[in-house]
Image (cartoon, rainbow, N blue to C red):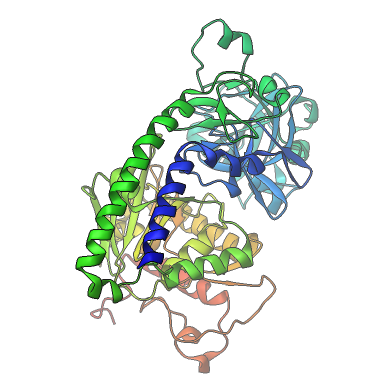
Length: 555
């Protein structure tokens, strides 16, 4: 009993001390400059792997968190990820490379369309925008096509933006337009079609906007759409950071204090608030101790049967094991209360499956998302781990983007980009080919089939780790606003070595009507990536015939 009371008193004391601001000490080590590959990461950039995306403090501007994945620095801009080739702190410039070009550096398929939105970044004066047009059905006069990107009778073109050929309707004759930014000094203006690959490999340059110290001294309010100068803080042997709650610049100092400009200046507003909160917290701690003592005396028998320490769930142990094996996840982790807030308490339901429900939500930046909430009683969480582990390692235009996840005890949720046109399944009408054609048209169905194949090829050959999906079917193909298909639902997926032909697998996984024979029975042969190809073929038959493969009435 006395040991228990002593523990509570010590806990209350540390609760008070911690509230005074000592939590900035651990940040000092994290906020030191880091080297990822050949890229030096320091203020206003910071290492995102080591700091939770939902915490109060950052080691730099909140949108400049750089992930270090397999020795490569990666920056996530709204909509896509980019390799960081160089950060020039003298010129305030950032050189990025499209992450997709690593699969084909000689003739990459451009997917850039960079969106800077509210970040304090702007294109450099050395940049040049190129217009790419893909899958063009007609020949463009005087503009040579990109031979390595031509597919059959379809042509692809590239030229300097706004320098389009007169009399040729690009939007009518071509399926897709992508604007790609490159450094003007690296592009051969006389041979764009032959030199665009090398120029994309050299990347493009962005400038970050900077607020001078004198702007603060003259009484101007700091707008974090621009990045504050870190010089005074670093010269006082501090490390620059940012308080997301108070929306203010901070200088973390060796004594554990935080200041508004440098370690020699007055304490920050956050420090004063912490002092007030600390006094209140100590009072709450003493009150809490008294309540627990009273409860302990009156309910001693109940205490004996109660576990004071909550053990980690099997899901959390499995997730930690995956991180140790493959490295940190480049995903945001949310609390369940945040999930409820972004879905408005699960008000707008998009669909229901055996795993649970899917709800429409909205992130803090306004982006719409689809939130899949898994049933707490559904299995042991293996499908959840599979989905987080596999899709977090992908980046492709035909693979749905996983933006984050929630794992809080038995509560599990996955946050995806929102696909306004839903699944392909609803555009395939049973036994009514004519109605299917009127919905999308044969050309659109053909393009959807081609793009699904590209996404599947990326999973099998484009990733460092081969991903087998095992559940390719129309229900798991989602369509964006332009009816561009994206493969989703990786709950049955399996990771394997790229050069591995057959894989060992216990049990059967997939949906009846799409499962390859060898997955159902090993008597038909070994399970490999070809099993996904079989499911893809069954889905194509369903798209062409306009009927459901699992309809028992179909002969």
